[in-house]
Image (cartoon, rainbow, N blue to C red):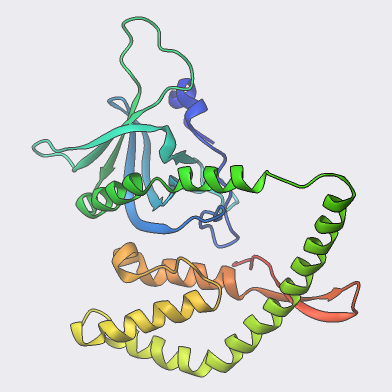
Length: 277
């Protein structure tokens, strides 16, 4: 779903999946840092994507066109650029033009002699460039994708033979029991905190910008994290689109259906995407 103009750098991008509320589907250990709307995309100096929303996370930059396919809610164009494919970045500002961030890319194939390295430019028409750039610096400095790789390498060391098979079966059984326990625990926590959540949400929405409410904002975000939303949308990260993005995130979380545990004949809850018409 990339623009044809960006075909020669398609190897720099990864598949972007969306939730039913049209937010980027989180990948393992991903944390959202910032959101900006009305962002244009340039490949080199050519405008390739007009007017979209841009999500910055600990692992990638996800861009979704605000234009939808005919008869559908799916964006016409969208892409996910892993931060590990970004060599460097800087800001750019010209008179009478929107502030931009220039992303120098690591090409997936060797460059032809004399050819300029590929780069993208993100143009921020709503004036969120500086906030986005600040969070990009933090994400790039933390390099969460390297930590994931180290964990994956550690997890690949396994015990083989009969002893290994026994340990694997034991671990699988323990994980299954843990999932059932966590499912009930999450539901109990959700029900016990429901009224408090509503009260906090109302107070935060009534005056979230005021300094006096910062403690309640932090409490609200912590509660969302405890309920299974590890990277909740905040007013600081989403800006003017805070309520819309928070509603989408909560819609994905709150779509709950019941299913049956085949081994123990217990009814547990599984979270599935919610379709929003």
